[in-house]
Image (cartoon, rainbow, N blue to C red; front, top):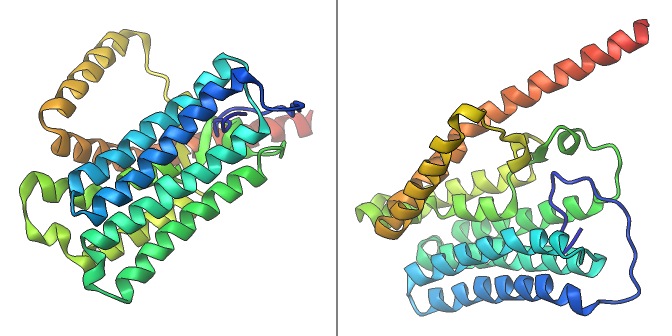
Length: 267
């Protein structure tokens, strides 16, 4: 683990006497992710909505590499795991909640604030659940290569979907506070749900399509540069469309395990 163990990674207990210099790099990236997420709130206060959302997205990108760098450098630490969870709670829970409140939800002073609070609290609860399960051996979702609920960075990205569409189309309905409150409440529920969701380790493309996927990745990167809001909206919709597939795939694995257990019991 460290800065935070990947949720699809089996973690082994490892104690260190202190924070080594080698551990500074991944934790510095975590700190940068935290600063980026909080700077998004500053942009939102100034009414610079695009910069606010992009700052949170940058925090998500940094969050995606800090743990991998830590494992590459063998710099995992409990300190890093705790720091990463705290940074995630602020960058992907509090910051998006405040940005969306300032952007739209403040037009519903009470319901809008409750929706923003629900999102921030559910993000914190999800991260607390993850930390509580770090040393738990029996984790059916993780052992099958799946996550439990929508990850916090992904949840933040999904919560901004109405903003992406508003920027791309300039249709005022996407900024409607009632619709936005319902939407982020749904995303908050998905974060703390017990449903199995796809992780990178559970997505294993066949050999004959790998070159095509590399080409798609390159095209997607180009699309992000040329049409960022449409591309971000499309990524969110693809993720949402894959959620039923993840449930079906996990159900298949669960049935195979049950059949194998029954076969061993009969033997």
